[in-house]
Length: 268
Image 1 (cartoon, rainbow, N blue to C red):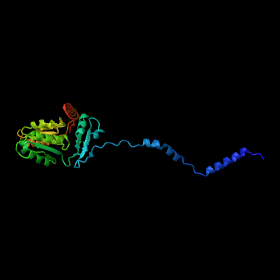
Image 2 (cartoon, rainbow, N blue to C red):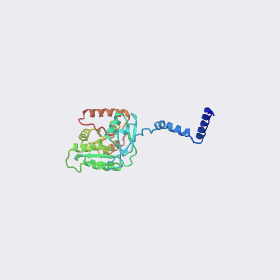
Image 3 (cartoon, rainbow, N blue to C red):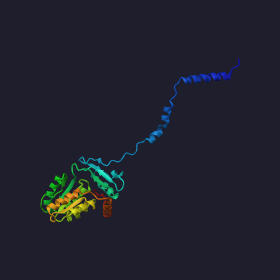
């Protein structure tokens, strides 16, 4: 009997189709997800996380440290708001001045840490000053001197200036007989802008226009009541507008030009 090849092929094909009909095939949706998975993963990759304004550092206290990288997302001429007790590193402060960024602090729940130092001529005023600062809610850090025995004012001015430039304290106050020598000594520390102030107007100008971070007082030049008002004004006055910051940045550039060692920046 002659074989009908076409019939045999037809029946075989029918059996194959019948068998396939009894087996579930992968759902198109599953295949589509599988095929698109690599592209979906790439498009949904997490974006670069925003930089934190502050980060904690093991410094023996609970304050925050503001780093130079914290300013990356702040536009030039903008404002970076940080907690009241945060420490702005010298490099962060330098970057802020270079880009005309104003650093603003929040409410002072625990007050500022303020470095205070004097020579023998400023001792009596310093003792009163410590009480004023505590009454205002601040935290004075006393670098001496401890009595009225003769000492050299540059030693104490340097201690205060280094505490401010290094970020241990936010601001500093130095006192001697005239307030001039301590200011000169403090200004030799990179990052410090010390201003001798004899009245409230000078204190306000020093902070607003010059971004002074160390106040110098002449104990023999001003009355106690005037000294207290100067201190209050100096602490209450914020940095001025960006146009002032631009000029302060030029002061910093002069400082950096003549420094012999690595620059330490400026502290706000």
